[in-house]
Image (tube, rainbow, N blue to C red; front, side, top):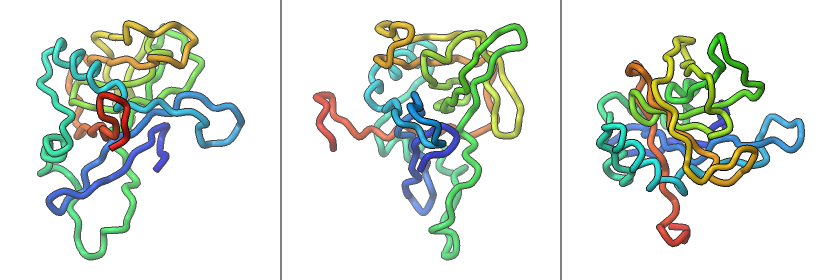
Length: 184
């Protein structure tokens, strides 16, 4: 499902919906509401894991470990709810310019830990992170992929470390590639 600049899916584990992120809207070639290109987050799983660990986070993108994270806070399935889409994507954030900054592009991000957001590198300057309830948190550190070149689609990813924790439950990354690039 496309929602708020994110390609995501809810999988089921232990009778609960567990959100997994597949990608972030990268560019639009035409004027449609759907993106023409998206950045597949799982291709950067190793870099994100290393970066988050360098920031003091203990993180794993193992699918089972991800499913168990924050499980008690996930939406529970009941007989009438199985096919009801999640209309409130609380782990989706809007990356907006700080009052003294300028950013012409509307950008989305993903809350991966309560104080970690992943977004496009092209969106990572003079920012605040705005949540679905319109609350915001400023950014402490911006870590851009070391192989990113401005105005390039390659390695267009950044990790944002927030100054405080969000009150929302983070999402997970759906790891659909092995290290050799083979689809699993």
